[in-house]
Length: 190
Image 1 (tube, rainbow, N blue to C red):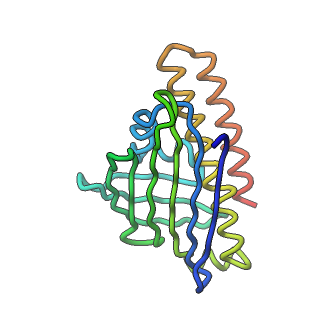
Image 2: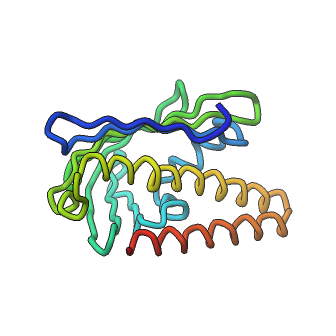
């Protein structure tokens, strides 16, 4: 797989959406999993996420996000996966969602990031999107998740460049990520 891949399906009620996406990453599954599962860092590559905070030592977290001026929050429990490396989660309050992210090795220095997510559309969000299931599924797949995965890749590439002392490349990558984040925020506020 050379680029971002995605598919979406909806439930018979139209509020349940299942999304599967994947993106090749130019670093190992160990690096990808370690960086991705540091959950409070999520807002670095997901501009719509306001925050992620650990609530206890048992994998419970609180998430807040903002879409088109509406703030949502939920709590989730997560579990780190060993084979393949990754994380799985399920919400326990707020927006009903669950899923898993897996990092499949493709070589010693690369992997494939696979995300599977199910979400029940909140009624208020459904009111913001006409033809909710189609539009929200498209929005999740082609915007929120695509941008998050691509920005995750670019943030980690920048972090790795800085860690090995390549300040010029690290700064350039962070500049590109910041530019994309600003464009995404403008799109989300429309």
